[in-house]
Length: 416
Image (cartoon, rainbow, N blue to C red; front, side, top):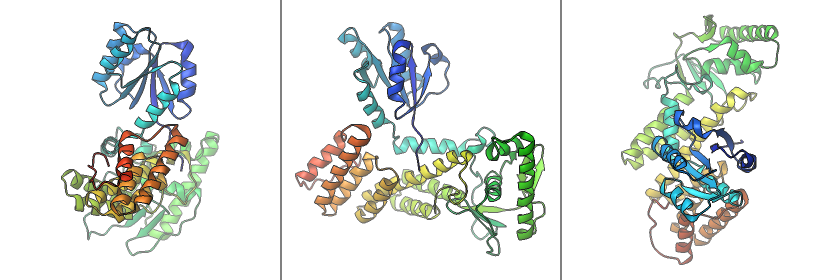
């Protein structure tokens, strides 16, 4: 599946050079242009920031200091045409991460953005936790995930829902509801996924009939809802499964559910909690159990509509996160066979992750497969060159030298 482009904020007051810089940056990134005067009123800023210098003045340095103070997690890069060497020195002194000459340094800027655009696992976890813990009333509807903890073991529920992979609904007696791979089933899946808060009628129309005249779209929605209700009535004996109230369609709150996304989310949280406490083995078990519940991408067997893309990407990237953590945990326990398995799964999802290439190099070398470790380095080198026109990082090259020299040194885990 295609991954969304990372977002870059471009702060510029140089209109004659802006379009040229934008043309380069937007080859691989989404960009938002922000006037310098608007910075002091912003409440948030993307992870990657390009500050396009026009003049190296004291006002410019105040702007840089404001960015570093208010948005300490953002990576700020400078682009400009310094008139003296002191301009570049001042840029670094005030917190610019790297400075590039315009326009000759644009490709080097892209290479640096590529190195920084893949968040570390700590940053990614923080982003996921923000996503999961946001109050339902504040989060965008299409991003809402179930916030109810899984019911205690042994307590029966009316229905078990599976959203990851092939969509299914199973009754308490183990019977699977007969579902077709059509838009009616997708509408049912949407209603059930958003069951904790309901969903506006107009939003459903936007999701499923965006280009249809309003009267026709409402008629199509009414027909589809009737079909959903008939299916549920025939299969579950719940005549009031789906209700309409105050402009919203809601699932009957007296009906109980469990779902794979609930369980997957909670197992990941437990794994991370034990990982932070240093309980390595326990964390590994939780993460492995979480992966057991990821049987495919979100609603993979149903028609793919635009409203599903953000939800699908979030769960896909959560799976990638879990696999990355498992690889690191296996290495810490010197379980190299398992680390090789999960590491290759990571690269099958995103082969540009240099850290994972480095982990596989280390696992192969510690397993006595030096030639495989060297081939892994060559593969990493080729991918970085082809995709980003850059070379491996110093950490990766240092590990490569250790392997070439056949040292018995155990590499520290910050390097891995």
